[in-house]
Image (tube, rainbow, N blue to C red; front, side):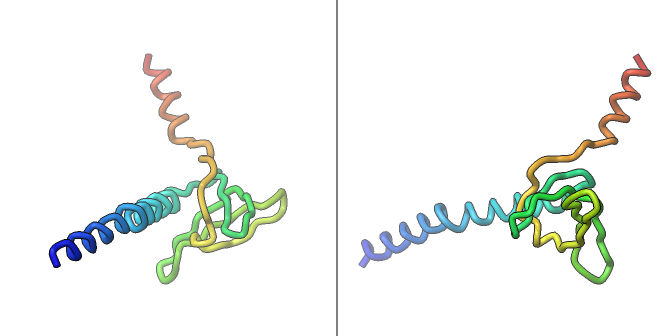
Length: 106
């Protein structure tokens, strides 16, 4: 009887370590990336489109929406759930301004 309980606990622990924990970790990373989306970031959508973030809208009564530039004159609105992953970060103007300020102080 004790062996059956130990084997069951071992199987549950292995299932947690190999399936549940990595999935939760991946979901946390994805959510963090979506919350940190900025203008200029390049993203991959769930539909396989690669686009540049043109803007981020956060309405009070609904989910966050991103404006995605697909080509020169094509900008679409999409919910953040449509974004699969952030491929690269865009230029961060704040960091450039800080670097210029530090150079002028020296």
